[in-house]
Amino acid sequence: MGLAATGLLGLLCGCGSRAAVPQVVRPAAPGGFEVKRFTGIGFSLAIPRGWTQAVAYPPMVAVRTSDRAVIALWRYPSSRPAPHTAAQLRQADRRLLAAARARDRTLRLINSSTTSVAGYPAIEFQTVQRIGHQVREVASTHLFRPGEELVLEEYSPPNLFAGLDRSVFSPVRRSLTALSR
Image (cartoon, rainbow, N blue to C red; front, side, top):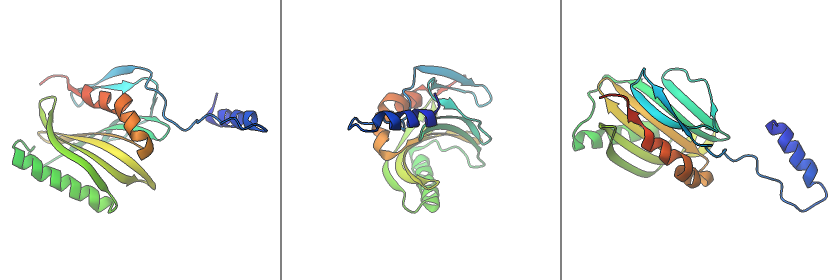
């Protein structure tokens, strides 16, 4: 049943009663995860089966959505050497945060950390920022390889983020795996 039909049915069923109308604007449960191999970038990622796959145009590699929640994998070419030392990662962290704040002056940093993902140096951010005209809580993982940066972005409205992070976003993040090294 389409979203419009479901909404209309909810309105009709709710007429004349005090019963709550079901919430139809929440992301779907993941419905399990399926591992997708992205051989062009040399990585695999477990993504929710119950979410909608949308068309991805470069530099986007893949995108899945459910209502206002999004998981997107990006691949950006980079002429900068990949950071390897703690000092280089901190410098990249500051540079990425400054670029994000230049796009959205209201951006609020919740957390930032340097790590390793699939054996590559990485930076993870959690922010609250505007995407389009909407405020979203965002978890982004920036993985650095020679000549490129892979970015996994996961975001939703702030009031839904914590639940989605536990049930969907964290498992997806942990699944990011190199196909070969």
